[in-house]
Amino acid sequence: MARPADPHARAALIAAARVEFMKKGLKGARIEDITAACGLSKGAFYLHATSKEALFGEVLGEFMSALQGLIDQRREETERFFAEQGAVEASDVSERSERYERLLAMSAEGDLRTLELMWSYRDVMQVLMRGCQGTDFESLVWGFVDREVSRVAQEFRRLQSGRALRTDVPSEVIGSLIVGTYVLLAQRMSQMQEKPDLAAWANSIHLLIREGCVPRCDVAAPVEPSRESPPKTSTSSRRAPSRALSRTRSTPRSGS
Image 1 (cartoon, rainbow, N blue to C red):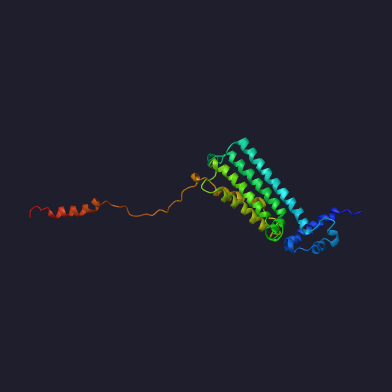
Image 2 (image 1 turned 90 degrees about the vertical axis):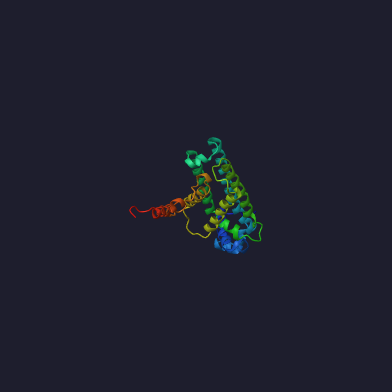
């Protein structure tokens, strides 16, 4: 009869594996190093996983499931907002209407939830971006990025249709900009030991996007520096003194 796997040992094994995957990549990590780090025998590893790739796949599955849950939650919140509040238009942006402020707050909360999840799985993101070359996971992150760019671009077009965002920027560009920002932040997180102020990160992202996407009608034209120059005089006014002088010279003096 097979010996049941110890759930505490499994948790320790997964934690040790995540550290090894992050340090050495998926191909470079060795099962004996993973088990040694958590005080298990190499044989005990196979009570919990069939291979190191299978173990990473389980952790990745947890992350992707949680991330998809956040995406679905955000989509549902967005649809409910527009169903209840109606379309956001340019006037909402210029007047900073309550409806527009609610949309911003809802988006910022969604961004913060995503950043919190990325922090918890920053090691997984690191492996996906830099440590899974030559494995079945190699193109997974970029396929996900492509899907997210399309989703963000669709949301952007929705706001463009009401001219709540500038219309002179292609939606695919802003989608790539936003998703690319998150990918680079995930990379930065993987190098950090202390958790940053993720709320400040989310607010900064929103500030940059909001200020950069203000409709063109609300963007003030640049003010040219004033260049003072002496007032121009007409040709007739410049010539007047000479004509006056000429008349003075041709007028005979009395008593001459």
